Picture 1 (tube, one colour):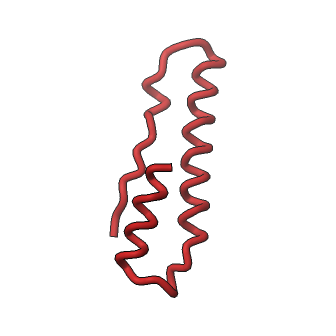
Picture 2 (tube, one colour):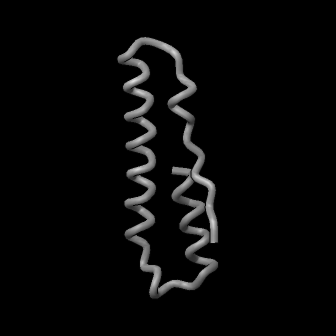
Length: 61
């Protein structure tokens, strides 16, 4: 099972050091939140279709 959780590439950003730092932090926070939500899923007790739906939903948050 796969899911695509698109996150803007912070390496592509041009700007001041502070702007670049902010973009990297935003990408980190987004990924951290999504991974945390994924790890909270009750994978042992829900079916694959429900898991897929939840994983896709996480990517849209």
